[in-house]
Picture 1 (cartoon, one colour):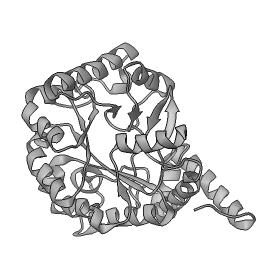
Picture 2: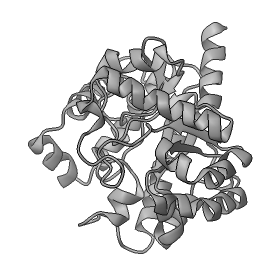
Picture 3: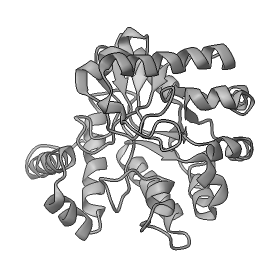
Picture 4: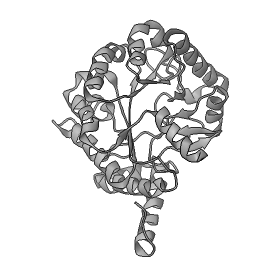
Amino acid sequence: MTAGPGKGSWTLSWKRWLVNTLGGNPGPLATASVYGLGGRFFSRWLFQAQGETAGTIPSSGGKLTVSFDVDYPEDVQALPALCDRLAALGITACFAVVGALVERFPDEHGRLVEDGHELLNHTQNHPDNELLCPDRTFDQLSPQEQAAEIGTCGKTCGELLGVEPAGFRAPHFGNVTGREFYRLLAEQGYRYSSSRTAPGTESFGLPFRAAEGVWEFPVSTCPRHPFAVLDSWHALRKRNARHLSDGEFAGLCREAVTLAERHGGYLNLYLDPRDAIEYEQAAAGLAELAPSRHSLEIVTYSRHLDLLSDQSSG
C-alpha cells in the first residue's frame, strides 16, 4: 500500500516514524503503552509501512516463510511427526539446526533434507542453551569464537547431511553485532541471516540487504505484543505464557496472515518443533499457514532471495 500525496501521506510517514522509533529500542514506557492498547495499532501500522516499503524492494512482499529452531533433543524427537504434518499441509519450511545435535541425531536431521526443507546454520553449540552451552551468549563471544561456531556447524551439516546451509540464524533472535556480524557471515559464504525481529528494522520487517552483501529476513512478531516473536514459546510454553486460551494462538496466526495479505507484506513465522506436535493450539496455528488458507506465496529463504536477486539484477 502506498499513500498518495497530502494528509494520507503525512499520516503514514508519521506512523512509520513511530513504528521505527518505538521498535528500535522499546523501553518500559513504550512497551507498556503499546501493549496496554493491545498492540493492534502498532502491528497494523507496521504492516502498512511494510506495504509502502515493498514498492521499493520488488518481490519482497506477498510472501510467507515458516521456520523452526531445532534447539533441544525434544525438538529432534518431534521431527518425524512434524515432517509428516508439514507434508499433509503442503508447507515447505526452513529449519535452523545446531551442529552438536546434528552429530547426535543425523538420521532425524537427514529427514529434513530428504523432504526438501531448507537448513539454516544455528551454530555448533547454541550459546546460552542450558544443555549445550549454558555459560555464554552468542554476542558475548569474540568474533573469532563466533566464526568458529558458524564454521563448525556448516562443516558438520556438510559432512553428515550432505548440505551446507546458505543462511544463518543467531541463537535467541537479536544477539548480533552489526556490520561485524554480517562480515563474519560473508567471509564464510553465507547469503542471508534471519536473526532480527521485524520492529526496528529499516524495512519494517521486509527482507533487506543488511551489510557485506548479506540479506536479513526479519522474524515477525505477535500482533498483540509486537516486541515479542509470534512463536509457541511466547504464546504457550514460557512461564506466564500470553495466549493459552483455546483457539487464541491460531487466531493470532490468522490475524498476522490477514495483515500481510491486506498490505502486501512479508510474514516470517517461527515455531518450536516439539510444540507444533505437543500443543494442539500450536498445531492449529500451523494449520492456518497452509497454502489452502491464504493467498500468500510460501517460500523458503533461499527461494525468496533468488526472487529478490532476480529483481536486483534485472
